[in-house]
Image (tube, rainbow, N blue to C red):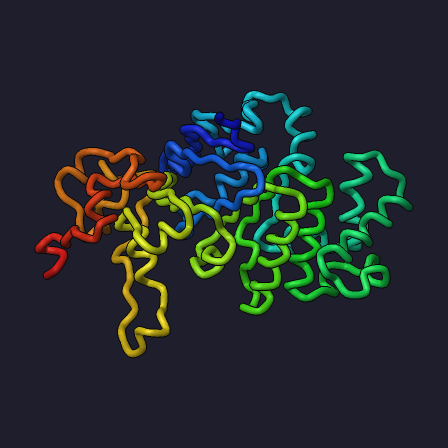
Length: 338
């Protein structure tokens, strides 16, 4: 018996029309999310992760952004075909988002309690008194000490970690089904990162939320994700559960990302790096977008774009040689070795 995913993205295309040409920010994106599941979307800066989140939330600037095709299904209904009134009701109530820079995302001239309470005033029609009480409860729920005495404080009076907790309080205020966390631990120290991620996991378990974690930090992902989608040049290059990705990557890009992580058991060795830079979104290479940087690329990779296909059961890769990469039997080209 199959169940409808909570959120499903199908063949999504998003473009930016610039003076330099059309930038293909999202280029045929596919993934799904179930209730209670954590999907981590990984990739370098410019791979399309944040644009994906903005498109799902309906906050993409249009123009210059333009949705050129595809579907975003929430409980089987296409968000992209909804009118703005219906999308506004969905946003914040059913699907919510934590932004990566809490200081710029929060209004600097309004108390944090007012900003949290606004969710209840706008979406639930609450009066100021009850809404403020709910704001205090939420501040306590996300672990802000002395919440009752700090409800009237402004964003600049909180530390980076506490501001991120306030952003989380706003995002979960109405118990959304889907929570998108866009780089939620950026600029936070390691201890605070762990606290924020632990808090998100606890809240997810409480509400059986679907969580989309957008990050470039492979360390953050390992502890909290159920499955991973690795993005490059606006496409998912590899998708599998978290254990499979870390144990047996099936795409050269994922392999390169994992090999670039410092290891405690490799002291004295030079860090591995992926050569070159991500492609220009206005001038994408033919075939596989990773082929100019790939040590295993052949003429086939330059001429034909690989589809996202199984390398093993439940493990998908957009690589012509996915099974060889997965088995670890592929060898670099001679020129790449030289």
